[in-house]
Length: 510
Image 1 (cartoon, rainbow, N blue to C red):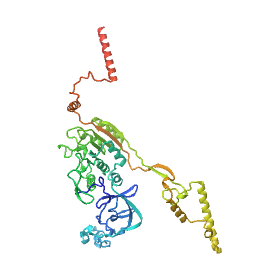
Image 2: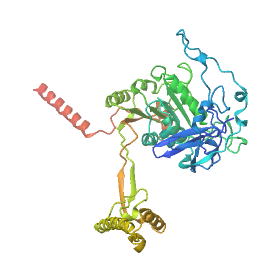
Image 3: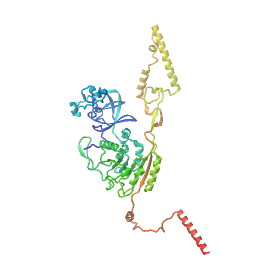
Image 4: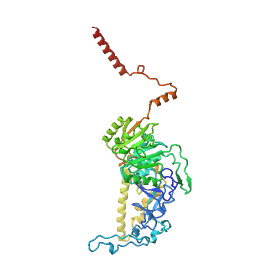
């Protein structure tokens, strides 16, 4: 049994054993698998804890929370990790035994195996945990995983295809629910997750699942054409990690990760001698030399391409020399509508800029004087405070009351900031200030050239005959080219040839 993928059918709240994303700041997201027990055996009294630079978050405070909730950090004794090992659960750190140190005769120390105690054999789910204590500062937001969020938080094994690139690629490849797509060069799996969501049109018929309410049910019957993603990579360790992620994220049956060198072995499922059953209508090649894999993507009996429809292809190359060789190979293999595109996306931030002394102490504002009158007023206030301070010191030496206590004309900075915060509730901040926009200084992407091409469906004389019969145009007539329309260039060339031949006839008569 398996649960529905959170990338395709997310639940309303965070569930145990599910993937969650902790949003700490705009460019800092941390993925974690929620557990009701300490599966990593780090020895925290609160159970499993995700530690970040913005606080510690026990998973007991994350589970059952609606997606998008703000979670406060907790006070966690991070020094108790030394309990891992022989004295796990005893509250004591494991001390190094004298025999484990370097031997006196210079021989290397021998590590003795640790015998599991009763605290190791006990079920981790049954182990009691300490209730978390909220911390005074620090918070995060718990988010459900999506391909966009996963791209920003995934562990980088290679360069990844970012959201601006793969969204445009999927649109140009005409990927819709039910499409079968080939991906060569899976890498870190960023494009794989986005493609899985784009082609999702139901789970396979033979797959059952355990729903979010923990009741066993059969998934809805899949339509006749279920979307699939066939992912290939030549690096064995990389493809194994991707396959494990696909299994954990509930995408098995939709994504198939295969270890293969497509340059040599192509895209056949069970070898070159078997009948392929991929029938792909879209191909994405993120390879160093995509032209070497194009010879396997032609119209031949063992082709992995769908023979009944046109196939759209995209290659992802960082160098223009790679593009030139790819375009040459595409032209020689019969691909049409070849086009190269370079993407350069920028995020534009639009906000209101508020300037003035009335913004002092507030976040995201410029608390400098907005006008000359404000600057002069603040200068008079500072000078008056200095005079009041010196007058108070003089009065204390003479035994008199200070100017502040006598007149109450000047207020402290704390009182002024509190007055500004109290007045903020009655202000319409969304309509104050000047509307400004600025582009993002740093863009998370890399230089790349996208080459798109289309391979028309295979068309034979038999297909031409059937098309004529279906359209009611009658049988196909063989033409010798006499009645076919001619271009102006062809007509001029024939006229010149006819004029030259007539001159030769006149010379022969003379």
